[in-house]
Image (cartoon, rainbow, N blue to C red; front, side, top):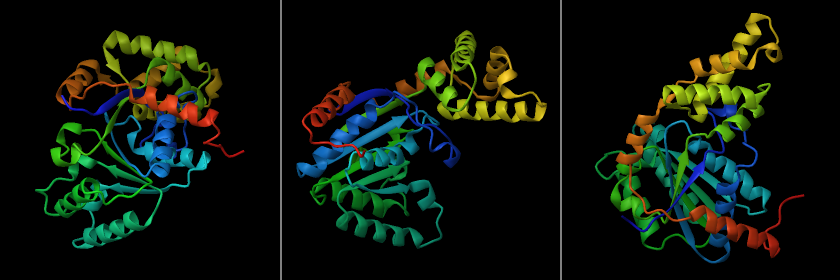
Length: 298
């Protein structure tokens, strides 16, 4: 057991690509507020903050840095966002990855305050010929005090147990992104324009519980999109479809995940000591707002 701080938070932003990047679930702001307080601390107290965000594929982790960046700007914390996707870096032409590393070093040395997001952080291992220089630089940069005030680093992964221990141990906090609950699924369906979202969600989740499955945010969005497409081609307006029929279609197209697979994933993933990261930093966020140290844009 290590000394990381963990929170289990419902996913707040969903979608497999930019089609859904603007979808925000109302009322699911705890994790954002916590990281706003973290960013305020980093920029005002000459501190570096690091966090590991992990969870099942399709929960919205990759969209979190962008949405957090928007939230920081809303609270007048002028962070710059640098998001690195190591799957894309591996796919670049030979030699191009060194150019990206050089540009990244320059940005990280000269940009403050900075939000640095490491997508697919499990790929950064010292035995990989392409990414070994990245591993060496990141561990040195984070470990030897080369980060000055105003830096927040997020490592994002679906495989926390595969992150190299040298790198993994440099992250102070962890946040587990859970799959959507019944409540957050209802909010998601409502945002996507599903009529009678509460009734549809109840049908959907009753069926899911019967079959022992859970949904990812990506799966639910794909299911809703498929239903909307079929509703359009059928000639019947979407609002005239019965909630039970809508739920049946979404269920069929959502590729639910077996609960046993989720349990196995949690058992096999990195075991982290449980602390109330979100609760403490959310409380700090409220204190900063009440004290007038944080001001939202009007």
